[in-house]
Length: 336
Image (cartoon, rainbow, N blue to C red):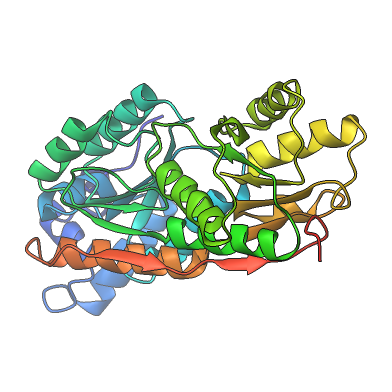
């Protein structure tokens, strides 16, 4: 299909293409009102659409922001995108969304794609703590600022917005202990996600506060998916160890573990209390509902966007590492 151009409109009206260009750009100083009206009416009739990419290339500005997320299973990332788009739109920016599916290679491809689209900045939650560090630095060296959210990255001079994983893990495990739990399993995150270290440290230090011995047998790698969480808790139970609580690195693996426990006739919370970090509405769609630390997604999206826009406006703007407080929402899976 042939697209109508400025030249086509100029030929149709028998006027210069420069006059058409000025009129379509809203140049009321150099185009008479009646000529402006005639050109706009003709453009609509002929189905003219301005080539925004070409215009932006001339302006050296795409007005596009890239957002890279690691997964779309939980609603957290979709909520982040929704609020980030709203914030960016108010400042005249559009968004290009890419999903890495927890795969560093796909993440690298997404970064290359966004560079080719000439985005002016990138908001991203990484799927590996250091695998693509060289690529992040390369993107930044090409003048494209990055703001990381939710998951922190090692050794990159870029702003980050996330919750205090250590503190929130400590607080929620402390609540489990105060409710009577003494043998708490930690469904830990993968080693390649640095937040896992902070959440594990919070778990360990909460036990220490109440003089509960740390037992590495109670720390199991739960992965990120529901299937991985289910397999991990079944492997743990095969050891025959008593337990009365489970603290999960993330929502999906915890829900997988919950499913396995209920299938084996464990009562929640009578036999086992459950809680996790990074809870979303998924925690409310199961029975019993699951106690979780919920992230302040609106605040996180707003701050991430404002930091990124600040760095686009001023490449020398200060790098900031913002730590937010999560909200512990107690539900039916928690012993009271």
